[in-house]
Amino acid sequence: MHDAFSFIESSGGIDGFRLDANDLQVLFLEDTAAPVVTFMVTYHVGSRNEHAGHTGATHMLEHLMFKGTERFHKRRGTSIFDTLQRVGAEVNASTWVDRTNYYEMLPKEHLPLAIEIEADRMRNALLDPDDVEAERTVILNEYDQGQNEPTRRLFDAVWSAAFVAHPYHHPTIGWRSDIETISRDGLKHFYDTYYWPNNATLSIIGDVDRDAALAQVAEAFGDLPRAPHAIPEVTTREPEQAGPRHVTVHQDGQLGAVLMGYKSPPALDEASDALDVLARILASGKSSRLYRRLTDRGLAADVFAMNFRLRDPSLFSLFAFLNPERTHEEVQAAIEETLAAVRADGVTADEVARAKKQLIAKEAFGRDGSFQVAAQLNEAIAAGDWRLYTTYLDRIDAVTVDAVNAAAQRFLTPAGRTTGWYVPDAVAA
Image (tube, rainbow, N blue to C red; front, side, top):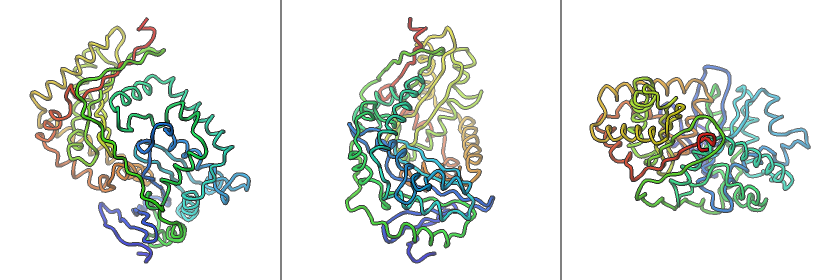
């Protein structure tokens, strides 16, 4: 191990380190299946960290950080995209509620270049005013495209109704008025608040030597200082919901939809594992309860269950596309009846065993390749503990029938429900 680092721990084949100079976290996993490496920087900042007037700042910075630094810039012929793509890299970034990530998947011999670029833009992004205005236009177009997608609007409406105090209320892209008005100075302040080594985790996954990779990280990132201030914590807690809520979205379209979200625990709560299993029991495959209750009986064209595992309390969500001639009232009533039966009578041992096998198989398939591993590890980092990734299979295997039934009774209650209907205008008329 390079002497610039302190070893933290190993879990599931992943070694965790801390760069002593600035508390940057580094995770390393050797994967020799192909001569490539994925390098991902996860910043512990997302729309959860934004406030009114500055919503969308994380997403706008995602765009702007590709505009470059003094060293890597299009006017020098060294733009970040061009520089990396010339060596065969796949490069991109994404923003979500609890995190932002920037990543490169590239031939292993070019890992030092990816490390150099990410270290440079961690603290040296230009945030040029002209780039801010150009990207503002791009993001407003992206926002408008999202508003033309009924499903996205429905999800935004339900989350905004479900969370009245916590910043999960805000869409990740931000509110349009904030996108229109946030200033370069406001973005710079946000950048200078959160984009520091001690608020980031690097993941290095691939066919590279660990000690050599750590030495490259130490050289590129070691001179970057810790933040000169404490990283702000999100202290707002969502008040307990005292009764069901309902929103309706009217928009052009064909098939209506129902989305029902139930307040659920943080990702680190062990009940989240049971809810993952319950989501499979409710809406995964033709034997699932909601498929038999809705799809087999012609009420819905399709049905999905999603347990969003986030850093703070979130939403366990059920989503159904209506069949023509069926009503939102029918579909909502059928979902509620199904959940009431689960709360009253519980699930069976056979259902739990089948759901666990499905989850374990899905997870195994989703870990094929360095980027897939990095992407899943990224979400565990965002949720608060990277070991959520390495221990997931064992934890799911340990979920019991009693745990699933307890989670259903605790969380899938009418008082904690927020329902959204997407009503196509043709139907509404």
